[in-house]
Image (cartoon, rainbow, N blue to C red; front, side):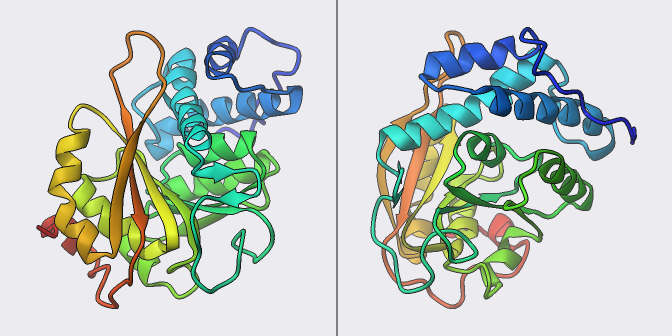
Length: 274
């Protein structure tokens, strides 16, 4: 790894032209500090990818469009649907500390299989009301996430090295979050078993999916029922012209969560509930 610091882009407005275009299209405003942090984040993703295998996308403009832009599109979709509010998440919450993971104010968001931090870190850069926990099993990617959060001054973002099934069994994480997000982690029958044990009652899983979104939701019906969930209307994800269509599948944890879920690591993917 290079020991050189990521560049500050405050005085180079062209570096983030693709991100600026996406933010403008989504009606989001990036101030100078947020832009500078995105520039540092971009430099770190490109620098660390060969070592940590963060993404197959290595063009700076494409990272901005496909990773930063789609993450911000998810933020916009959740705000537009009322899943995220300025004063907290939509829906009720079971007993337990309200707000962020430290019990303070904020919306507790968990990113499952966070990888390079998409979508939760771009969302957090634009919205500091989000108390973000990044769950990632790969040690190199966790090191990247820790270094990036430190570099960007995001000391309130927590990185947890664990498999999703392990996180769902951890007493400090189980039933602790208002919103779970995951991008390209697993098919819905598997993702539901990863995510719902981490959610408080009333919390939601928000999963961007492509052309098989509705089919995956049907396939996940048994898992959703078993995990005490309820499928809600999906949300359109606003993407630039020419991009493959995506929608955000929404599953709310509305009922009791059985102690036997999630099953031990590897079993949900090997034997999805059906």
